[in-house]
Length: 389
Image (cartoon, rainbow, N blue to C red; front, side, top):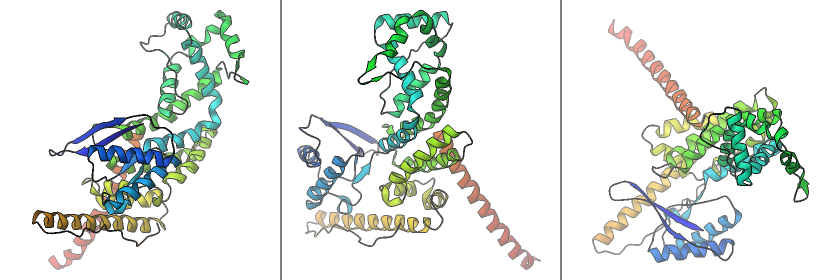
């Protein structure tokens, strides 16, 4: 287990440091929570804003443990209400895997063919000879994926697609190739070798996965702040899935429908994810609350979006009150007085191509906003024109 801290230094530059890398005795939530608490104490961290973890039950319990322990020392913002942030890249990985799990035959057959090529230096050399014979010009070679990671599956398919003709030659020239697929893998025969239909599906999967690959890279970026980008990507995923679910091509439509069900489990109602992802959009001077309101109306039902907007405003108000009290307490300490710091916890509740897709949504909002301003200006001009005459 590793723990990375992110902070803004005195020059307002984002910094990150891996502060510990260790092995834990088990994956129980309390055990993980105690190790994190111990690490924070050793490094002298007195305040924690958020903790980002994978979507696992043990991590949920670890966050509950930390909320109790750190909250008792007054080291959390708003009593730890916004402490837990689920890793967006991990959630996206779960959503995509839900979409392709029923279409795994084609992917598995290509994966097994790649595994055969990578299984020994001799087989790799023979495969390189096939590449030369087929006059395929490429400096790269096939790579094996981690089946549970969409990024690696996308890269495996993208690389393998270029060598489709090279994979056809072992059928006739290498008897071991077909025998290898006939061998048992555990209790069942290996899927494959790939047929033309598998390669056709693979090309569809490549286009399908490319968007999510780019979004994942956006989530994983460590050189600049990404919190203000997360909801843009989440909204663009919704638009893309809605479009695909209405696609006439059955395979793509089925995958999109499966993914939409998983999407609504994690990113459906706004109370499913941390509201700070919405606050980050509001604090981005390029968008602010106006864009967020439009985005909520576009992504969710118009009956639900007003309550979600109210939830965001409530979150902003709660954070403002908290930091206002923090400023008062800091001033009191500087003046030498005592401070009775109260953690504010408002109990009022309110019901509530990746880059190209995201940019298109922003442009749609800007165009709508410009048309609205033109309508207001036109109406204002019609009102004052008779007075001028």
